Image 1: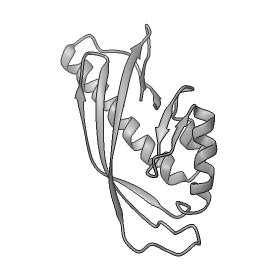
Image 2 (image 1 turned 180 degrees about the vertical axis):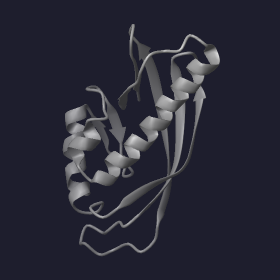
Image 3 (image 1 turned 90 degrees about the horizontal axis):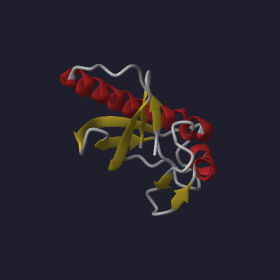
Length: 143
């Protein structure tokens, strides 16, 4: 789960959809930038308190602090020089407040735990669910 604050909701449905889609787009690239910072705190600051994350090895982390803690090692070692690039993404609204986001990514600059460079790029797919919640003046996107 990831959280991103937005701005006022436009009353026009098309503009509202465009606005919500722009929040999703912003969130996708904030995620990329947080990953590329290699700072577990920056990464975790995108998350809601009860977030859950399953990494590429199948390890599931529960809670923002656990996710931050579990990203410290890879960001200091195997992912220290890694760069994540968003190749494409798409989102599909499930209803007015829930959106599915699919991010196709490429990453390079990985190392083995022993520090040996891995010369090839990795490719993957992130599937996220975002929930839009609104107050009088702001929206939040939570994944």
